[in-house]
Length: 450
Image (cartoon, rainbow, N blue to C red; front, side):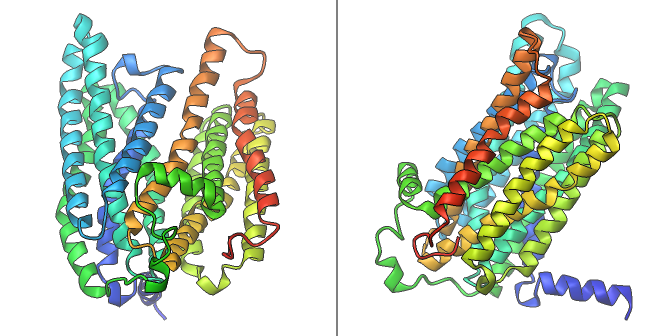
């Protein structure tokens, strides 16, 4: 059998013919969501004005950008419903296009005005920051609508396809850093090349604007509309309103949601610790370690989504997998610090973080989608968007922690090496989640498999 036939069958297994619009849809969603990832990668490079660079300023800017995205995502999720998913996604793309265009203009004029007193020192950085936040708002408006459209494909396909959605986004963590390093080398040659990251994002946003309506039309023709079971929708707790404050009430009352949010937030904290520790590895091993980590994350996420079946999602298996993954993530962060004098081994150890992190991230997003569908939740996009907002908000504190650690080393000269201090602080949420999850899952939670 030829390799092309093998590839064709593999693609058909992941993207069945009955949903021939899914591949186009994922391309569109990928282009929409890339800007947040690309900007977070390049924010600490020489792309932005000097006032927004530095060991303390850069993490603070990334924290502000990440917090803003999480907050926008929460409030944009509230008004998202099946009737306005298309219009909200399109509007979010248009806002992203406008934000990218403004950043292109600012990056074009910045070399010539960056040395002009107050304009270069305060006004230009402020305009850059506002444009970045504006772009985050566009992505946040589109995200819950994108998730709702995918999840509404039904009980059998919705969770799996939500997994594919996040896998598509995770793929950009492989090539976005490579692009950022390439952009940086060009910027060193000529400051005009600051325009490249934002011009690239503008091109992708325009592509999404063209592709999305076609993909949406094909998806709508291919899938039957989801109808929540009447018996379940009569339960007020199952169909709670999408007011932001209500989500925190559910977070307190429903253990499955609370556990999912805490695990994903701890996972993001651990990744911040790993990135800080990897900086101590000599080049090119630090870059290879993070790139390999991203590749392993993507491959494992794809396998998790492909092999997922509702019947296999048992409590006992899930509990073992989650605890194993959490302990391995903790061990990897420690070993990278210990092995910083052996960069080849340290980079190899970093590869282990990717699979276990992916099992948690993709697996829990798939599980929570299934949880909502089985409950008969009609506003899937709103609920999935708010869920994403919660764990991103708590996880984004890790960026703030990184800034504080840098501040301590810059101004106070802490006796502890920065990677060790980062590990001690960022690994604490993982240890607390391990203890909480171990105790909470001794019995079946709420009659559901967790």
